[in-house]
Image (cartoon, rainbow, N blue to C red):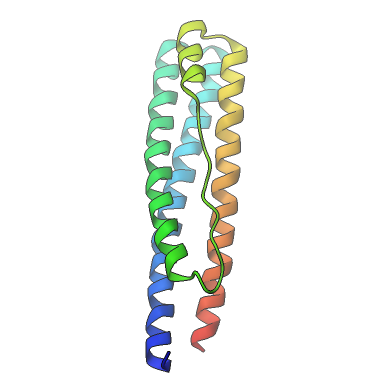
Length: 141
């Protein structure tokens, strides 16, 4: 592989990293918002807060799917540098059903736990992409 081609591939990988980071940060903001609504829901927010929380969780799920697509592209671009692990976030249908149906503290707590776990995974992915992106930048110099 020639120098110019290698430089082009590094640039493409950096662009893919930027896209992945943007998507991951949007997912993190959505999860944070869902968590905030979830706290309100746990402490007596009622049906409106339950609906808002699940709306924000749906937003986060869409952002996570977008981030996964970006991470797959990023992984392809830097396959020879590092592999990027897929994010795993799943708020199961039963938890959502239980939250609406029972609207109890235990179901709310379980959803909050899942939101927190999802945020942690997103933040770890952000750190990993940033680390690889920094390596790619150093390869240009």
